Amino acid sequence: MKNNNHWQRMQVTKRSLQRQLLLWTVLPLLVLWLAGAGIIYAVSLHYASENNDAHLSRLADTLAAQVIKAARHESASTAESINAAAQLLLKSGPEGQLHYAIQFGDRKSVIGSAIAPFKTTPSDQNRQIFSDISLENRPYRLLSAYYAANHAENQPEVIVEVAKDLSAQTATLNQYMLRMALPLVAMMLLISVIIWFGVKSSLKPLVLLKQMVETRQAQDLSPLVLENAPEELNALSDALNQLLASTEGSVNRQRRFIADAAHQLRTPLAGLKSQTELAMRESNPEGLRDRLNMVHTSATRSIHLVNQLLTLARSEPGSPNGIPKVKMDLARLIRDLTGELVPRALAARIDLGCDCLVQEAWIDGNSALLRELFINLVENAIKYIPRDGSVTVRLTETATQYVVDVEDNGPGIPDADKQRVFERFFRREQTGNGCGLGMAIVREIVERHSGTVELLDAEPNGLIVHVVLPKNLFIA
Image (cartoon, helix red, strand yellow):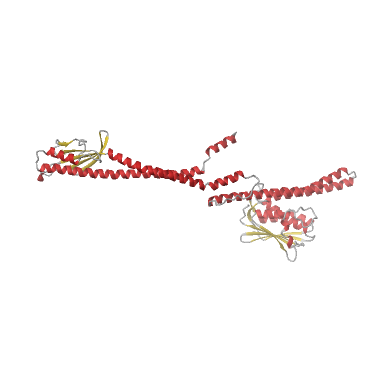
């Protein structure tokens, strides 16, 4: 139940790559379009306001000039003539309704209609004051202009107010923005459709890869082949192919191990079964003892084979049962295991010696596997050289490597067999209790430690197993 809930949460929270690409492509365009429209509207409104202010300023100057001219001639019909001129000058047109008011210095005589009325008081320091007002629920732009008195020229002090209705201008600007927005919206929709087709076409190889993975059988580990795929998707398919190749290699190693183990265990187990059957039918105590000895020998060989197979499986790269790396002294390991094998060498009349030219050889390695590696080399040398022979384990170093040589003075190995001895279950001689896995184990352990192993001829005779391990050791 818990797993089902977790899966449902994953289903709810999963996201579509195509939807995200469309969102992050179309959304910025939409934001830029709205921002552009807002900027255009603000700039248009700014220039329209500047034109309005300039127009109102010219009107105010003209009205003030008419008032000053009438005052100089002391016309009896000053108000009537100014009103007539003002009506002609401020005649309503497409630019909007205009209103005016003129106040003289006595602050009592007003020509026209009071607009604000005269709530702002311009002066010499602030000759023109612009403001936004509302008349009859309509927006107006108001200019209050001050013209100082000049008694020498019979010029009175005059304050002129001119207001312009902005409703028509606002409607015109809105119509302009609407007419501009319609083609932009159509263009935005067209661009969105183009982007949608582009994203869908670009993601088609990814959909194809998804279908290839979904429809593939679990046993099919062949590489995925994508044609005309983009570089990023090729990198993904290459990574998947590497994973498939690694999985195929692991599966093949497991199959080979199972096949080899079944093949190799079949013979000793069949022999063990036969010997036990014969022992069960044996009535002679001496014959029964001989049969039991043969059973013991077969069981010992089977145990040795199983141990070798387990070591081989553990030493393969990618094995989940491998022992983690530890910091260890390779020189001490070689000295200790050489000392442990001295009694066995003496029993076989073999002179076993250790020549460590390096006092300490610290590496990061798998101590159990490295121990198995060198025990196999020394035991093979003891097993396959004649009596009264000698085996020497030698440790040297270079700037970047440690070199371990296991040298004996036996008959050696022909060049034709020097590579074959590393094959699993290859035995040059069918005598003895060996199972042909010792050198295969050696190769697997060395390769897992990023090293190399090769067989060289010793002088004047014999064999050298030459193992090279890097100093900066990291297990694969």
